[in-house]
Image (tube, rainbow, N blue to C red; front, side, top):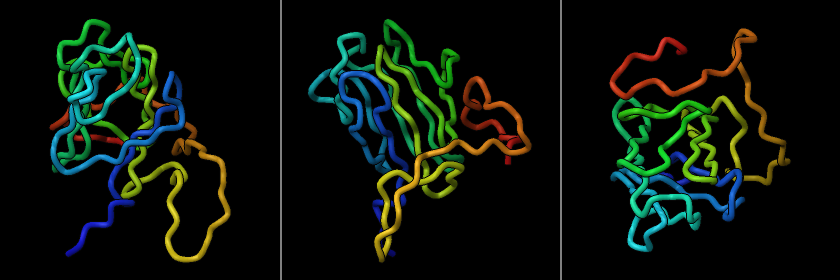
Amino acid sequence: MEEISQLLPLLMVASGPMRGVGFRLRRQPQVIGRDPTVDIVVRDPHLSRRHAEIRLTGEGVCVTDLGSTNGTWVNGGRASGSTRLADGDVIRLGRTELRFHDPGVARTDPVGLSFGAAQQQRPTLVLVPGGMSPRAAGTPCGVADSRA
């Protein structure tokens, strides 16, 4: 079966020097950093050369800090170990914020996707079920998520 790249998760730069740039995730792990040899190069002097790794797993998408100087933050909380991401989560690396979008389980409107006929663009809104406030940090990878 042919894989549709527009259905793979996406990291969009929400703030920082590269605002508006998007990175489509792949099936193999990808390293994020400022070194030109990494998979996802982010031009931010506050990032480590090899800052974090992002990977697709059977449980979802996980981000892992690679011992960076300034740390990796998910939704305002410092990530320790591997942290599972949910659609709409914000990852902060240095002074750059990346917003995670997963079209397969989207709780937010997709960004820049169009299938078939042209669709009217709508602003991205985070939908919080039951009026609960968004969570402060991601769920560790391999840990069941009770938000289902």
